[in-house]
Amino acid sequence: MTQPAFYQNRAAEPVTHSIWLLLSGFMGVLIGYFEWIANPLIVYSWICARRKHIREALLTSIAATALILSFLLRKKMDWPGVATDTHPDIQGCAAGYWLWLASALAMVIGSGAELVPGVLKSRVVSVPPDQDHRS
Image (cartoon, rainbow, N blue to C red; front, side, top):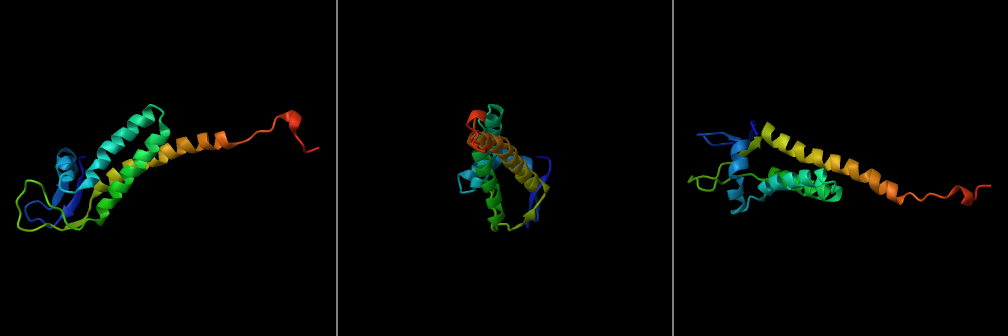
């Protein structure tokens, strides 16, 4: 949250800081910036993982990752409550964005790594020793 999130061609402030986006991003949801919803999804995936609801943690972290990646498709960014005569172009993503993405991907990998052995273990069919037909 201490890192810049992305760069814009705004003369007054070309860098957009992550903490500002976290605190005010919910207003963007009202005008179609749904990427911010990834934040509560990541928190929910942490809660699910802590409670050993691994499947839910995996699904919510995948959804958060998809929303975060969708930001890469944005070319311009309007600011709710800020009057401008232009819609500033997004010039590129900064460290804050990549750390945000990395945190969601870490949850996907961690939840997946926790879930896969349990799924594989439940699908293994063991043959009791007295029914072994290899003789």
